[in-house]
Length: 146
Image 1 (cartoon, rainbow, N blue to C red):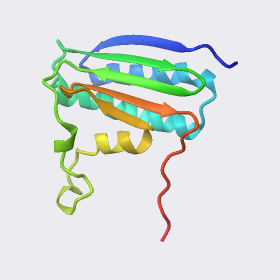
Image 2: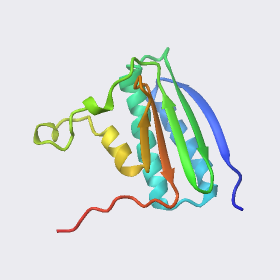
Image 3: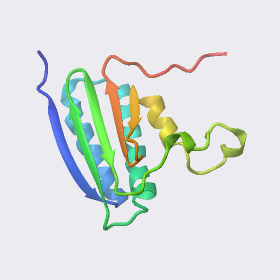
Image 4: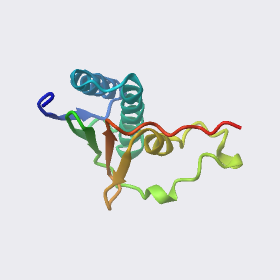
């Protein structure tokens, strides 16, 4: 039997610096569970992208609006849910960031990165909550060599 399960809800204002504190708190909570450096990188990257999206796009950087973060971690997986107070969106309507016409856009890759680095990514029906899962035994996708 490993470490006991850790769970911690947090609510922050829509300020990017507060999101940085959340990322550090989550990473610190995950460390005792023995996840690989690669998994820790994946969680950090996906969480940073999800928080930035919630703050910038969901809440339009309105500091009077909050972002709620719930996460649990145990020996098998990390589950993180981020909910903003924005109107929501439909992830299937995001332009494909790998298309030529989108390659030079300065944004639009967050959801793609979350999906690439986490085991599972789910959005609620209204599009204002993302839940990301990173299973300990799930490796990152490999880029095929030519």
